[in-house]
Amino acid sequence: MSRELLERRFPALAARVPAAGEDARVAWSAGPVPALTLDGVQLESRFDARAEAELQARLVPAGSRRATVYGTAQGTLVRLLLERAELVSLRVVVLNARLLAG
Image (cartoon, rainbow, N blue to C red; front, side):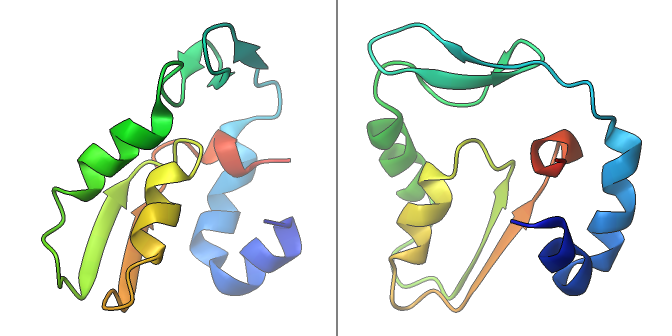
Protein backbone atom coordinates (compact mmCIF):
# COMPACT_ATOMS: atom_id res chain seq x y z
CA MET A 1 0.00 0.00 0.00
CA SER A 2 1.41 3.39 -0.89
CA ARG A 3 1.90 5.98 1.80
CA GLU A 4 -0.52 8.34 -0.03
CA LEU A 5 -3.26 5.71 -0.07
CA LEU A 6 -2.60 4.89 3.57
CA GLU A 7 -2.89 8.59 4.48
CA ARG A 8 -6.18 8.92 2.57
CA ARG A 9 -7.86 5.77 3.85
CA PHE A 10 -6.34 5.39 7.32
CA PRO A 11 -5.05 8.79 8.49
CA ALA A 12 -4.69 7.76 12.16
CA LEU A 13 -2.53 4.77 11.21
CA ALA A 14 -0.51 6.84 8.72
CA ALA A 15 0.29 9.33 11.47
CA ARG A 16 1.81 6.52 13.57
CA VAL A 17 4.00 5.02 10.84
CA PRO A 18 6.89 7.51 11.14
CA ALA A 19 7.20 6.66 14.83
CA ALA A 20 7.84 3.04 13.86
CA GLY A 21 11.24 3.99 12.51
CA GLU A 22 12.89 3.27 9.19
CA ASP A 23 15.80 1.09 10.22
CA ALA A 24 13.94 -2.22 10.20
CA ARG A 25 15.91 -5.34 9.32
CA VAL A 26 13.95 -7.27 6.71
CA ALA A 27 15.12 -10.64 5.40
CA TRP A 28 13.93 -14.03 4.16
CA SER A 29 14.38 -16.90 6.58
CA ALA A 30 15.52 -20.24 5.22
CA GLY A 31 13.25 -23.27 5.22
CA PRO A 32 11.11 -25.43 2.93
CA VAL A 33 9.11 -22.25 2.17
CA PRO A 34 10.91 -18.93 2.70
CA ALA A 35 9.26 -16.63 5.23
CA LEU A 36 9.72 -12.92 5.64
CA THR A 37 11.30 -11.78 8.90
CA LEU A 38 11.21 -8.29 10.35
CA ASP A 39 13.77 -7.48 13.03
CA GLY A 40 14.25 -11.21 13.57
CA VAL A 41 10.53 -11.98 13.94
CA GLN A 42 9.26 -14.52 11.43
CA LEU A 43 5.92 -13.42 9.96
CA GLU A 44 4.63 -16.77 8.65
CA SER A 45 5.37 -20.46 8.73
CA ARG A 46 8.40 -21.71 6.83
CA PHE A 47 6.69 -25.04 6.31
CA ASP A 48 3.08 -24.56 5.15
CA ALA A 49 1.75 -21.05 5.63
CA ARG A 50 -1.38 -21.82 3.60
CA ALA A 51 -2.33 -24.80 5.80
CA GLU A 52 -1.77 -22.76 8.94
CA ALA A 53 -3.86 -19.89 7.56
CA GLU A 54 -6.64 -22.34 6.67
CA LEU A 55 -6.54 -23.65 10.24
CA GLN A 56 -6.91 -20.11 11.59
CA ALA A 57 -9.65 -19.27 9.06
CA ARG A 58 -11.68 -22.24 10.33
CA LEU A 59 -11.85 -20.49 13.70
CA VAL A 60 -14.09 -17.88 12.04
CA PRO A 61 -17.49 -19.60 11.84
CA ALA A 62 -18.87 -20.24 8.35
CA GLY A 63 -21.43 -17.60 7.46
CA SER A 64 -19.83 -14.90 9.62
CA ARG A 65 -20.41 -11.45 8.22
CA ARG A 66 -17.55 -9.86 10.19
CA ALA A 67 -14.12 -10.94 11.39
CA THR A 68 -11.06 -9.39 13.00
CA VAL A 69 -7.48 -10.46 12.33
CA TYR A 70 -4.70 -9.40 14.69
CA GLY A 71 -1.50 -8.81 12.76
CA THR A 72 -0.88 -8.86 9.04
CA ALA A 73 1.70 -11.65 8.77
CA GLN A 74 2.29 -11.97 5.02
CA GLY A 75 -1.41 -11.69 4.21
CA THR A 76 -2.30 -15.35 3.66
CA LEU A 77 -5.06 -15.46 6.30
CA VAL A 78 -6.46 -12.11 5.16
CA ARG A 79 -6.63 -13.30 1.55
CA LEU A 80 -8.38 -16.53 2.58
CA LEU A 81 -11.01 -14.68 4.59
CA LEU A 82 -11.60 -12.16 1.80
CA GLU A 83 -12.53 -15.06 -0.49
CA ARG A 84 -15.66 -15.62 1.61
CA ALA A 85 -18.63 -14.08 -0.18
CA GLU A 86 -20.64 -13.70 3.04
CA LEU A 87 -17.92 -11.68 4.79
CA VAL A 88 -18.81 -8.00 4.51
CA SER A 89 -16.30 -6.59 7.00
CA LEU A 90 -12.75 -7.68 7.75
CA ARG A 91 -10.90 -5.64 10.35
CA VAL A 92 -7.12 -6.05 10.36
CA VAL A 93 -5.42 -4.78 13.51
CA VAL A 94 -1.86 -3.83 12.66
CA LEU A 95 0.37 -4.88 15.53
CA ASN A 96 3.60 -3.56 14.07
CA ALA A 97 3.39 -0.35 12.04
CA ARG A 98 6.92 -0.98 10.74
CA LEU A 99 5.40 -3.53 8.36
CA LEU A 100 3.66 -0.72 6.53
CA ALA A 101 6.50 1.80 6.57
CA GLY A 102 8.46 2.53 3.46
